[in-house]
Image (cartoon, rainbow, N blue to C red):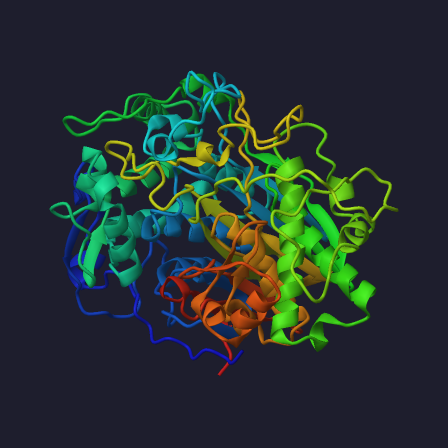
Length: 625
């Protein structure tokens, strides 16, 4: 797996002309839709709402240096985070500012209307904690909310494009809590760069244009969404400047009035009104939602203890329930270790075919257990699912010469691990959208943030809040519409009042001897778990440089047909896996990892994708020559 060459910068999106830089926000029409115009010539030194002129950094997939680091899928967002670090902000400040900027430049993946999970290492206390900003179901939701009168599941696409799919947003509450618990900036200061970016605009790249085009039909169902994001019913042209003054208004409201404007004020009322009765084009009707202002007032972003496991001397910290990410990543790594113990062959010594065979078997096994046991319910057997003893029992079915039939039966995390008898009960793979975004930050004091945020599907519910320019999530489609568990067994991921849908988001931090070693995460729905695990294994066990571990062709095995990127599917490795009995399906791309490696003496290596999603953006405050 050779190193991919760095891509030339194609997404420098700041509007840098003098006519725009000097334009006060007050003269922009607060209720106007997003606009496009021809991009002006670039110049360095744009003021993003901070005093002074920050140093512009290029868009590259890997950068090494000191002073702090940021890695995201977008150059402008990474630059915002670097500017925060350069001016004395810490990793939490940079994470919130970068995330808010991604809400502008990646509005179909994340934003005010969504939710997410943050894993944070606090250098002062030498501890890892997490914040759960996952969306919640309204108080009126029950296990049958997404079923027809005959008990069958409602049409998935009908629910996606409706108010019924919209959960109570958690992102603003997470931002506020992260700054209060870990940060040094006020919410007012942290959101100012994103407000400026929304007002001044960014240059449309191919990814943004393609995502808009792919959603144009459903965006056209909602007049406000069409007004903000389409141009005569089509995607804005690549190279034009896209501004969103309505979104700038939303950020200005949040930063000056606080999150109470959303959870108990006019902004929240606008969300509730639109979710309950979405405005649609003539002749189009969609189901309304059930969210109320009481649901908004009841929302809390929660501090939760992280999932903690160990892998080859590293402490691995991930997100707990309602995410399945921390549990599944831990089980995959435990299974890889168990396969080594059973066979006596280290992962580092394997051919690419045998390595990915092991990875596929481990991942499918972990997903079998995840689908059966994990959800926002009491009594999830977390410690058993992540225990090496459970993995050792599950590994006894591993055959280095052939793939297990799919779906693999789920195991019994009951604390008694002496049986090697295969299970008999299986489940089908539930649906989970492929969107979302991830960012990673680190500061010069040793704090580290790994943060995944989402609005679920690319484009979320396709419903835009009138006058505020942001899309609402369709996160409640992450619930199972009907039970996927065997008869007589309660499905842990059915909807319920105030319940948080199960997620695969896997923000992860690895410590070595109690100090940050590696932080990473990815978008991609259920493929997040496999992308994060494969990157960790590629870096730790396969000897790949970090940027190569991020860029390596991916396999996503989730206890059904296995998604394989073209470089694997059509090459000799794919042929070898098929010969072992793996059922591969070709997919365009899997995930979009960002990562930061903490080196010695305050030096960081930031890494991002070389190609996926048009390539990511890795930055440090003080790059090495």
